[in-house]
Image (cartoon, rainbow, N blue to C red; front, side):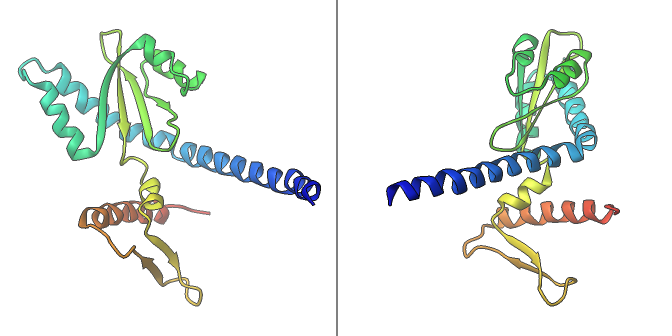
Length: 189
C-alpha cells in the first residue's frame, strides 16, 4: 500500500505541484513585465522627488523630509553603494545594465512588491526605493477582499470583505480597485 501511495505521489502529485508553482512564477513574471515601462515612469517621479529632497542643501533635515514622503506614499528609501546595488542577486543582467547607464532598474523581490534602483547623479551611490503602492494589482490580491462578477449578470460586481475590516484597509482597497478599473478600462483586445 505504501508503494502504491509513493508511486501515485511521485507520478501525479509531484508533477502537478511543480507545474502549479511554475505557472504561478510565470504569471508573476508576465504581470510584472506587462506594464514595466509605465511602472518605471511612475517610479521616475518618485526618484526625482527623492533626489530633490536629498540634494537640496537649504534643508538641513532631508532625512526627516524623506521619512514624511515614505509615510505619505508608502515607500522606503535607502541609499546604497553602487557596487552593492550591482552585486544584487535578485537583479537581472539587463537591469544591471540599465542601472549602469543611469536608468531605473527593477529588482525582483521574493514575496512580492516592487523595488526600483537608480544611480544618484554625480555620486557612486544608488537610491533604492521599495514600493508598496506602485503595483495596484498586488493590493487588490492581498487585501483579502473577494471581488468578482456575479454568475447571472456580468455587469454586477460582488464584493465580499472579511468580517473585520479597518477603515485603512477599506481605503487601500478602494484606491487599488479604482486604479485597476481605470487601467482595465483602457485595455483593448
